[in-house]
Image 1 (tube, one colour):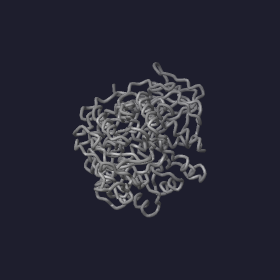
Image 2 (cartoon, one colour):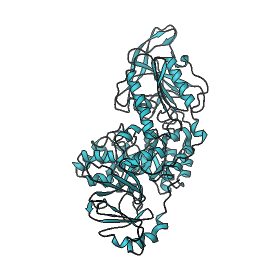
Image 3 (cartoon, helix red, strand yellow):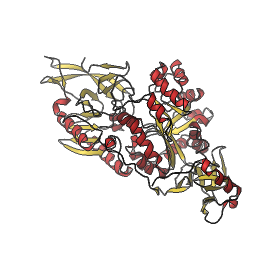
Image 4 (cartoon, rainbow, N blue to C red):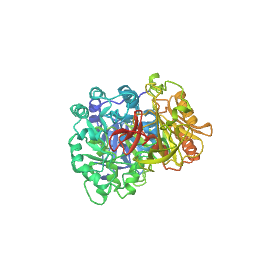
Length: 595
């Protein structure tokens, strides 16, 4: 089944009739304390719902009740609006939209603004359409932003598909597209790049919101040039001054708490200590792994964290409800308990601890006691979305070596240095030995390879990486490889690197970890090589196994897989690998591995 709801226009007469007492509501809440995020008040009011929308919110809803009206006694508990995630990537959970929804509904998330730029790099506009279509089938509201940057750095990588202004203009007409996804090519905007400005213009002309991504600490003329270029929000801030600069520039400062991002505590002081107006501050997750969703929560976790950082609970709730809705032009549709809005409401006994006891979406009870109570329908994902790993041939150990200059017995090699808990890498060098004409890794230096997987070219680009701490004979291959999503393989043993790569070719993508000649962990991600349509608990268990095997291979890094999956992200300094070679991201140019 799909969960369709009537538009406000189709329900208006019924909403008015119920509010006026001429017709009976479907559902009435009594005995609750209603959190009014519009004014930051808590009122002992009652709520009447019809057609999946709030009809009456006021002191006494007895005139709205009649035969067939369901009465919910809230018993003195709080009624708060359903939570909104202002910026996120569903693919980061390794789940399809349906399974992501199933995982987060019990945590009170009833609206998501998702940028499917991972699948856009693999399947282009068609992949975005598939995500959009499955999203619209759910019992909660999942809006899609049309991805803006595939490839993220033109000329330095080859994606499975490219996105251009014509694609953006076409997508703006789809019912579930809310705006443009994060504009990561901020140097392009600052330089006045025609293609980037055309994508922004197509979004503005459609009256929709442009997402920002200004990943630079420079708050001088470059920042102001970017703000003038049209992005309406930004989630890349990490310091108090970043949040303040964005809000002063008329942008929404999006503060993220994901599985690997911890940027709320350092920025929310703009409100809690500086006393600035919080209306232009929005909470989001950006990237949440299945394990985080299963163990710790989703937007409820972010709100709790903001409160723990000293934020007034009612202000924190505004940042996860009405502020977000206003930002996307949906203030009349959701984000508050007010007449006409979608009846998304959470029952909780405590505004600081925020236990999510029951969740209603569009007036239907969708979760209780941590369990999802509704069907989350799956799209029938077509074959072309499930067969995206094209290696072109069977890979062998010899594909994973770097030949040395003739006669050399040692060489100086550039090495990608992984930094724990950070997205940037360091550009390092190492003095490495040569045997049989091939450069060998030594000490903490491992082999890294990028295997082309979109067009079956059989291409393999090799380099070196350090910081993982791997020991013994091992290899790990992944088709989650931001943002181009080729295959990244890291290992100490070339034969195992070939085996891990070929294994992902067999299963259609995911993560494969090998140790001492055998595969010890496999996370199957058959949809675009990025997502599973299995439940979050199963995916989280497979990822748990992967993490423990990585540790058994000697890796002690926190969030090591996140580091692994970002090694091809050619827009973040200093050194990365792509299908075209080793990339110096401080200069935005290709560079040689051997000096």
